[in-house]
Image (cartoon, rainbow, N blue to C red; front, side, top):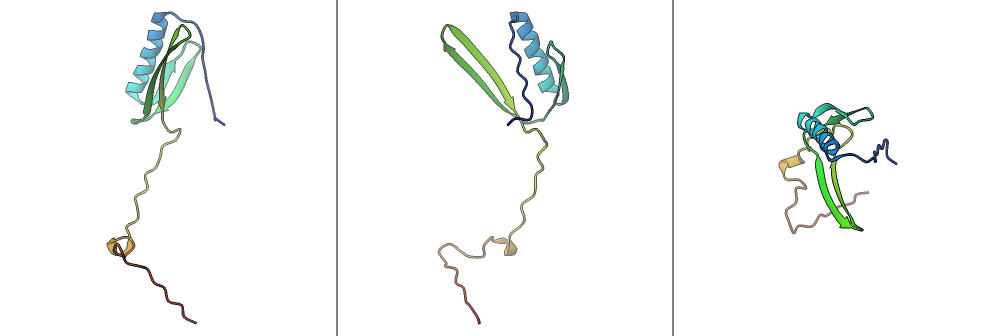
Length: 105
């Protein structure tokens, strides 16, 4: 289940569509805490420096559909440094050697 989903479907002029894309582009360019006017109100988002994008074009049933999608984590991810292996070589075994175990009573 998604925490939040907003979807807006409406008819608009070519100029209105361009203005909306321009506002989104400005928010992406600025990054950080961004506010975008979307006609109904203001959408506030945290936009990180790195994100994933997808552009999809579908042609069929007498229509052309253009989707532009950007995704990023909802929260900042923390990078945890890897712990160094003991002895500096990881398992301490070289390739091709078998591990043996000894049981004592």
